Length: 242
Image 1 (cartoon, rainbow, N blue to C red):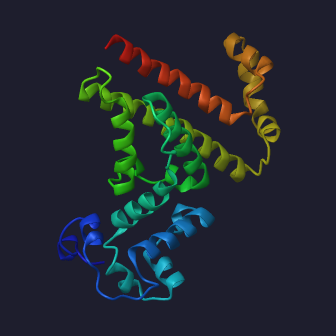
Image 2: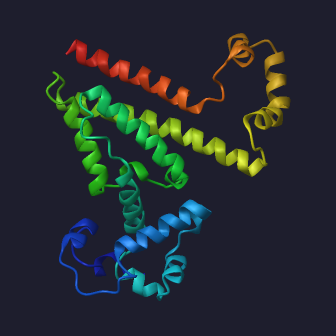
């Protein structure tokens, strides 16, 4: 792998915006990202290696390194490319509607691409599309009486909820696959010995009432959106207090 100081000058995004010399259509940073995303979607994040990508593209591994200097660039390209799926309609206005639209779309994106929940640093990937999404959300909070620090804290709080809740959802789905459980009922049966013991101790009466009476325990969408409304209500409280 080329050393970082031997890589082309400038950040990944600066290099991509420069006029490119004639190159093979099959070997561009965007095409490399497409192949990497396809591998990650189909086989999991561990399947994404530069050697495997090069094989899929029919090129030598070092040829791919001329376009993507290493794993950090590759991850950033992958995150940026799938972030194109975050596109609320232009008529979505108002801070609450904007934050909610991005939250729902981010959950859908992570469920479609579960490897996002496995990446070491997806939240810190600085990419043009992620910055555009952050800009639109922050702009929706501007002019409402919040200082810039509070605006960023509110935005990050919503983002943390979305990523945390969806990571838990993705992790549960992966665990179910690993255990061979194909439904929520099978999962409950698989966990029944541990849960039954804990409930029978009598130490968790409120949780027991939930397990016996909950009507939406298998409705991940409702759970996500209800939690999201709780977080957005908190932001609304900040705005009302000025």
